[in-house]
Length: 228
Image (cartoon, rainbow, N blue to C red; front, side, top):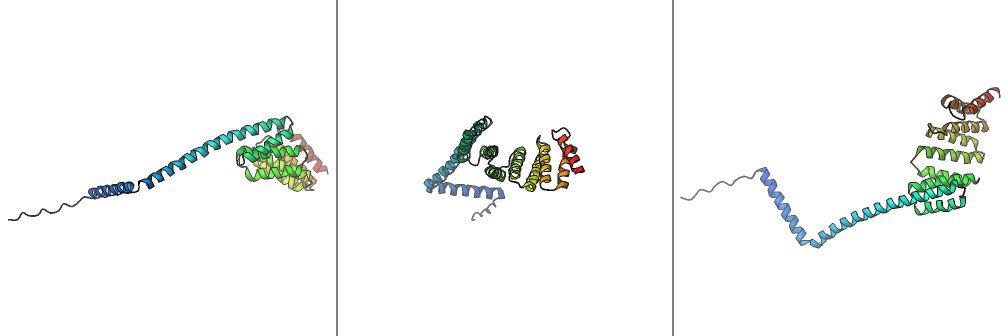
């Protein structure tokens, strides 16, 4: 009697998955063996990219340190009134380290330098460039807005100057210069023949900055506006 054929055992899902995994593994092994040079080239390429990223990160860090050091030197020359030397350093900072935070702050310092020299057009351009590109300290931004306002006021555009002084105070209301910005806004509104807006600025100083050096000045201006 012929031996009865045993029914073929059905594979479980787990066994099917394992079988497919083995099959895929063998296919991958075969591919690597057949395309060894290509695979090694891909691996080498990946490592090259990683190495490049590491090198770029290192030099960016080093560049940032060098830029900060140069900014510090320029600030020292600025405070020592060595404006020509400070300008040279700042120009180098902005050219060689463009895009760094230090280079952007260098624009702010350059703007102040030109303002001190009475070159309001150049100062205004640097303040604007700084404000268009910098997104760091709100105090520094407020100071730049006020610097821009001072340049505009020097050119006789009092209404725009007042609006910018007001904007500077709103940007950093807790800054030590905030009351001064409001006071200067009030003075420029007066020059622009806007007494109501001037009164509003002086009133804000009196109400919100009682301990500021501009408190008494603002009160005096309010009295002046009342009797005018």
